[in-house]
Image (cartoon, rainbow over the protein chains, first blue to last red):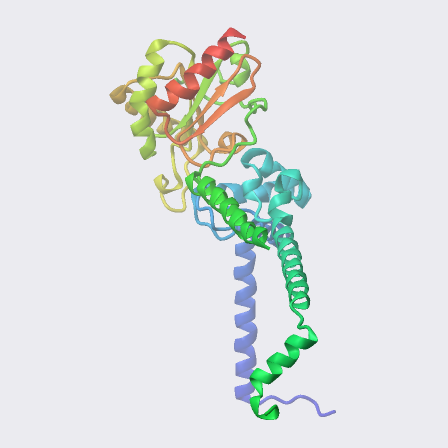
Length: 163
Length: 196
């Protein structure tokens, strides 16, 4: 293995890269003080993705710029830092704002229709389709021709075969 | 065979019923999980300086109303005269909850106000507003940072709560209280709660 030799330009470039990285580190450190520790921020963001902003209803709490969304993010951050689990934090918000804050509503008797309704409709449609096909088959078999009818139909359709 | 044709028709009627109900609902009216739950406790400064902190516990044994408002809130201006004339009847005490009176945009950039300055500013503004438009409140609690608002599930000002003698929330109105709403819902409810 050859020892790594850098030209003057190469060393200059390397130095520039190292300096840039260091500057990045210094800035990152400052950002940590303004925000929170990365793990708190990551969990807060993850949770906020699943929560609805109540002011602008089709935005997540993570993406909304509304004042209340901001307050709630602060609240979620504090709860994360206090060591609450995701379920506990969601329950905290549901107790105040109702199921509506959850983008994925819980499965419980009130939401059964919401969760299983589409599948019930699909099953119903399949059942109907099956019934329909069976009914059709029954009718076509009833409509099967007798030998006399078949002969007559043959005669009408192919008159040249039977002079 | 003929009966099968009726099934899509029945399904269509069901769909129509869902749409008829769904389209009439205001998507901003979210049923509050707080109704029939105890009103969350808090302890806040009031509008008048020098008074002790207000806590809902102090209203135990009375039917009362809590109205969330702010001077920057447009719908509160419309609602205000309704509340003033309602309060004049003296049917129940009306407690105001001043919600985030001082907004982030009021603070000089990069220099958040101290809680004392915020409180002073909020009091000054709210008092001026009430002096000009009439004061329907028996007292106003100052929720400067909106934390009490979060506990009460406030997501749009104004909001109004009717709380019974046991401190249980019995009704929540999101948006302005109108004379029609007072007559049809709030007054009958208060009369019923006052009897019990």
